[in-house]
Image (tube, rainbow, N blue to C red; front, side):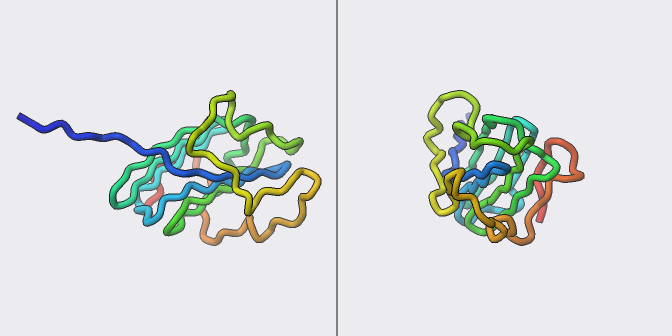
Length: 147
């Protein structure tokens, strides 16, 4: 007889900040296995999957508003996956990141990147995280990105 294998997934810690035209997301997974990262971005959703030496992570998010898949990008770094999600339409800050009012226990505000709507300034240093993956030209959703 076989011993059942536990295949439970963990929710990764996620922090976020926004501007009138974009959302910054950081998924923190120290020692992430770069080849394990799967990112699927659609106009209303994000799906992330990845693992480190001891955990598998799986996270789905339905955005408060629509995003521009082609102009959005992400970067897999040794301790985190950083996203720059471009909003479909520039405008007032979203009330929250996700559609619906359910509290996401793994989601917190990124106070290092957060600015109030009336304080927006040049964020070029946040937009360039070097070597990032671009969603443009890759079709809607995207599977695992080998490295």
